[in-house]
Image (cartoon, rainbow, N blue to C red; front, side, top):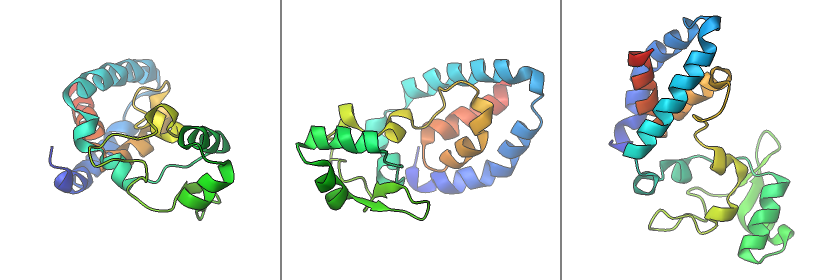
Length: 160
């Protein structure tokens, strides 16, 4: 999928996708979860994150104190050095990376701290979590960044 057109394509179907979630009956939430988890596996068999890495180039994850500990250990830096070198405090008073793309993203799209990456990175794009309905608005937003999410939502609307 062409990453440059992804945002435009996601915006084009956003209203339809919101309507889809609005019309799902409460008694079908478990079925929705099951279908999303099935489709999650399916789309990630087709999409190679290392070919894309759009999330690492464009999304600034929230960095927790635990994340700072892991990053410090992985980089053999002191925690305050990690904060000083890589992080800033955003408008929500959370730590985020000073710059994007992520400072740990290599030219080959590999993460130099992959095993110790922040929790937000580990969980992204959240399409494999329980009670998916609770984060459907975030998922619609993520469809503009992640081709796997976009494909999952388009398939979900057809299947459900």
